[in-house]
Image 1 (tube, rainbow, N blue to C red):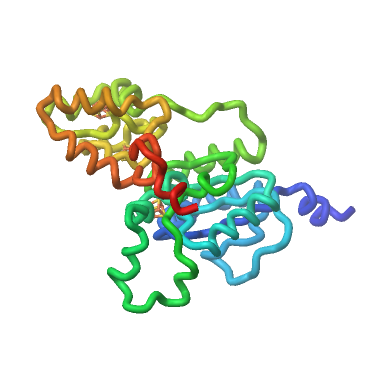
Image 2 (cartoon, protein in one colour):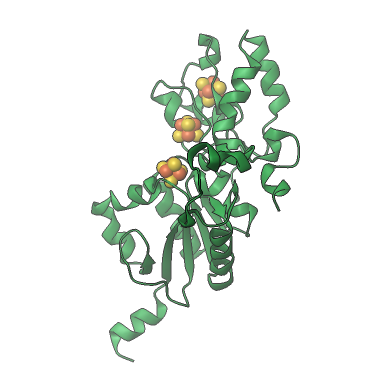
Length: 265
Ligand code: SF4
Ligand code: SF4
Ligand code: SF4
């Protein structure tokens, strides 16, 4: 078999798909052109909606998905991607936790009419915004809004070459303490690092800003205990809850009831 043909037959074929999102996470990838060629040397990108108008092929190995599921058409798209790809990677808060589109999950039936008199056909058959992981099984996640390019490369490598790393469950505070940051609670400010899953090396507290929870609530977070801490520091639980809404609107840990996404099924 000629070299080019042999290489093509063993190189993982990757598709990159954007759903409801600002495309900022895909931009994070394209912005790193000095490293991008190394990454692209390991894979064959056979479809990338943002960079080419070529149609998606019928077969590929890895699907990278950005954005939340907000209509029946995108729900169908992710199901098809799951059937065809051996590995699914979701990138960014919109895809992983429903992120910013997820803010509209509550009372979503009223949302389009707040903007449109007649809902445009291009919106498709709207449903309550939901994470990709609530529709299909996801193999790997790259969290944050926007994603960190290097974390994306780590996760892509794990998807291509295998990994025994378990999903992280520790909260941000562990990483924040390692950075020797002074806790925002001691300064009278709410920080969501208390309940947010770690992995970004406490990026925002290290830059002098409280965490706003873009990685989503950790599965091991104790929200009730966190609320007690908020009270202990003389801060507002309502404000704490309101801040959590930004990236966790469809998370059952947060809503304490059936998620909006489940209700809409
Ligand atoms: S996670 Fe943030 S940066 Fe990425 S697509 Fe969603 S809104 Fe944009
Ligand atoms: S500043 Fe935030 S992340 Fe850091 S220790 Fe305090 S609550 Fe945790
Ligand atoms: S510190 Fe919080 S808000 Fe900042 S990147 Fe990490 S998870 Fe996101």
